[in-house]
Image (tube, rainbow, N blue to C red):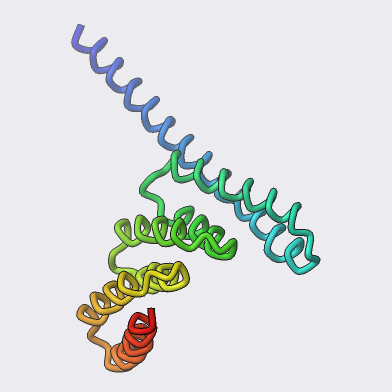
Length: 163
């Protein structure tokens, strides 16, 4: 009886492991397909002013990245790809939301915070962008980086004051 339970548990964990591997592989496939659609739209169709076809390819890319996220929600790459896809389509608020999710998954990656701030700025939400930049500045230890962040904050404060 004890061996039967052990064999059953072993089989269960093997299936669970295969399921996770399968999900990871399908997430990779969705992300890869999303990148193909994004590249086709952004690098081929947009420069040729084929806006209708580009819009279709962007939509397919968004769907693929979303499926990759669904399959593997802790994997950061499809969030970054989806955020970029939304950003280049001028869907800035949606891009900021996706980049914020990515930032929660990888808080040590400061460049993602900059993408959040940039998306917020482009959406016209200067106060939120400023808040992100100031939080990033408070965490920064590198002197060159703090100088750059101080400049960005100064520019954002001017923009926020104009609104």
